[in-house]
Length: 411
Image 1: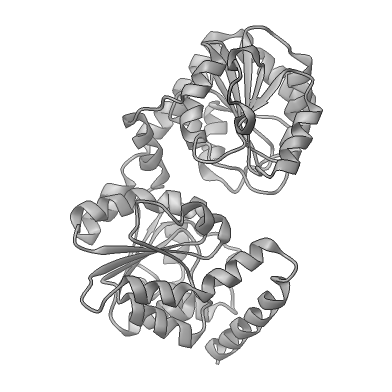
Image 2: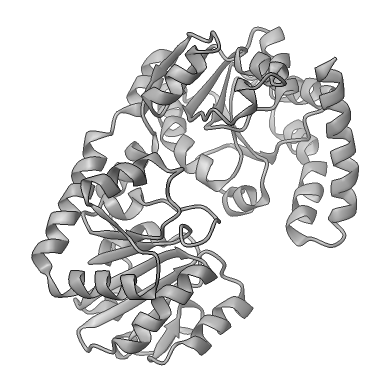
């Protein structure tokens, strides 16, 4: 009965999204993209193809699943890899990724769509990443005896699996052949409801960021901009973050310091608003051609795809998202390069941040004055920067290995 009500709710959600898509561009992208899913699958997969399917809610989950996907492509080179996204913020960024053969939007989780999607993909293996679970699809896969894994999972007592009304979601959870959690607490939590095919693998993002050290991280235009000066990178920032660090930038026109801002939102109107708030000479990626970048104090990275490499030029990294409630962005990307990190106060839902705060690799700031004091100390004290940076790098290296555990289970 619960499954029936859930499916009716999904149908109603579909109607609501159709209406909302008239007024919201992001929703419109998802609605129109889902209309093409089955056509893309029909044109890309034959009945004779062997496939592996990985589903990600959005971009962050893709980054977590990617090192596993790369390992599977090596182990099973003849399989086609299908990646599905629910959110446009994942699909639109990764729709042309070379790491998958087919990239699609996941259709809404109706019983009809679930059967049709499984029919079209007919996967030998299904991977769901972190937390997004769709009952009709997962239950359909179990019905057909398809091996399904949940990887990099985290659980909290507030989730529906652990509530009196969560029987449908529990049945979907129990349909996974095995679950790999990021931490011991998550493992104990799902064991408390009777699910025992679970092991702690850790977070695959540690493997992902560790691979960053194996590639060439040179970014020519950043090299031309920094010219070996002390550099501070403000990564994945939001307006709430801007209100903290822009006053610092404006009041610290030190000849030996360069500032790089990589906003989460790169819409031209938002970038213009940042530029207008800055008193220092500023250049953007979008208008840098023909300019002597070394003459500028602030570089705004109003593009995507470079931040992971740009962190390699930082002496200090500020990672956005935790001043407000948008969610802390990936602190492991700068941590792997061995630098001190600064974040906002709302980080409690991020285990890696909590641990690094306790270890003193990360500094937490609540207001402009605290950011000023913290950044000023780190800029002046090279020894302090190295101590905190070493803590962060060691933490990443210590927590590698999740991918190997998952791949060993699959084989």
